[in-house]
Image 1 (cartoon, rainbow, N blue to C red):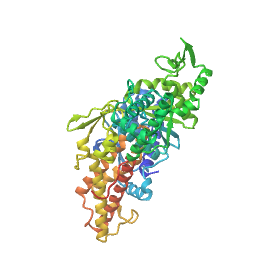
Image 2: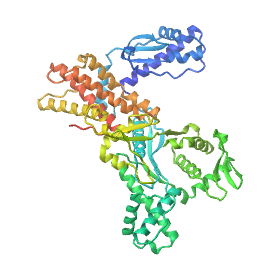
Image 3: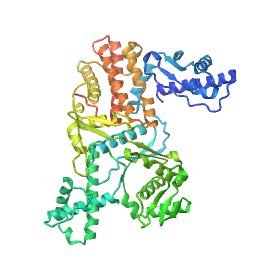
Image 4: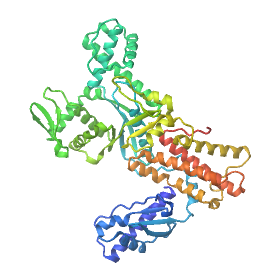
Length: 559
């Protein structure tokens, strides 16, 4: 465990003991003790750590939170925690200020743990399946898919670092109506290229890439039209979706995203998984017949109305394969499911949650992150997107224009549930206004400092060798404290599903380093101080590399 997490653990234990001691002396009756949380105050003059424990206890004790805070402080034994002072602030916050004795241990931790610094066993190996992107295989990946890819992949990285056993999965919806229309669209263009008249399907895909696919298909399968009409349609549907899946895989790999499994919906149908889940739910008593259709009594689990599983014509609704798919996930041994969906699926959450419970799993074992849309801006103008008409910026085009690093970081700057305006001009700007450039420049500057040291014969000391107690300047202390925050930032980002938290933290590390570099000369100082600062610089380099890798962004050594 890192020194920062160990320190927080000790302080939380001391607060817990203070509550018990105060309750005994004051006669407090506390039936539900809230979880003790420590936060880093936004304002430096508010201390190093703060807790709202007194305000949370107000509900139990029925006293003013400042009074509760004062009693807790009187009962608080903080020996062995490096806490130098405690005070009540505002409506009842307890602010704690730490001495600096523990900071040298932070630098030793970073050096000893290397790329593993910040990792913990907080998740205790819990098996989590994270499903994201899952775009229909009927066209190239677009920028909304790209945002989902960046968010999902980074969240998986963060949760792995926090001690969860995470698998990444992509659900290929290759058995629905859109896949069928896509196949018909390819077939129509194939026939036109063969000099035949063909009725283009209503609601089909007239984009240019469909014609390009038809040209490829004519080269690969020149005798397609010798098959029956039914065989032609089935072949085009399967061939077209398979070809698009391969293209989607290539686009995602170029974006630094790889999935553990690409799960095919058609496999659910071929394995009769839909029939099996319907039978299971019938035997459990959660399905009933009405007007010739089979209904799921989802209102028994909090949904606003019951849902049709099988229509009166015997055709399953779109809900049925989704239920079968999630049942399949659980039966593969996953304890917690996280899906990333678009905003148009918000109303779908309640019925899927109901299905999860009907299948016998806890409601809180299924979770949906709603990802808001992206607006691309170019020269201040919105870039309109329409997949059906073919007028959209593909993910590959975006990468060609702004690059993988900028694209991933920009997609991660905002909370997933916030709408994102993506400024393509800013993304390619080489200035401190561009956050990803600003962060990468900090890493490149560190590499330059270390190169200069080696070129001038300066030996890079280890943390054990350096006189770290010499790091007393405000800019030095601020930087070490920022580096110390990484383990807790990872845990909080994992628990709250906030990948943007690591993007923000990475930027803060770069900003704090730039401030340090402005105020503290590294090379050419007294040898002992120079050595201590070189250890600090190397620790900063390590933290930047760890966080940039977590975000899927490169850490260049020269810029």
